[in-house]
Length: 96
Image 1 (tube, rainbow, N blue to C red):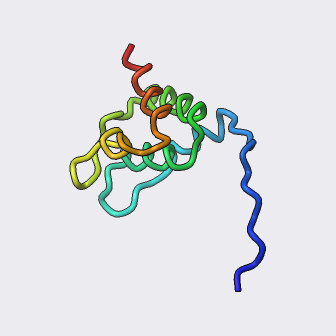
Image 2 (image 1 turned 135 degrees about the horizontal axis):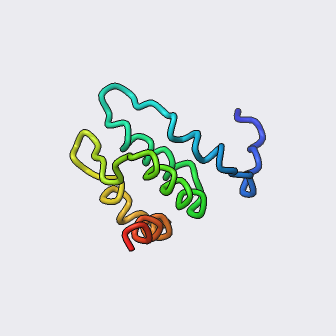
Image 3 (image 1 turned 90 degrees about the vertical axis):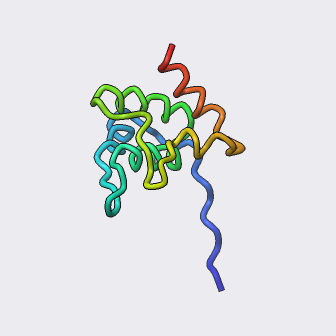
């Protein structure tokens, strides 16, 4: 039998150092490192933190259009996700 569920933490502090720590993540096997970091950040961050992350990501010369082993970008994968719109908008703001 499972123990009591843990409360969901929704007000964690995401300072710049914590956001930048995602840039240090290493991929598994032969996965593209830039794709891996983008995917992990998308899965682990709130939209406003992800938007800050994207700025740091670009400052380090990384590729926003990195692809997975199937040739898909993060943006292609999340395009139909229910809660992806703010993440996609963060990416679009970088283009303008």
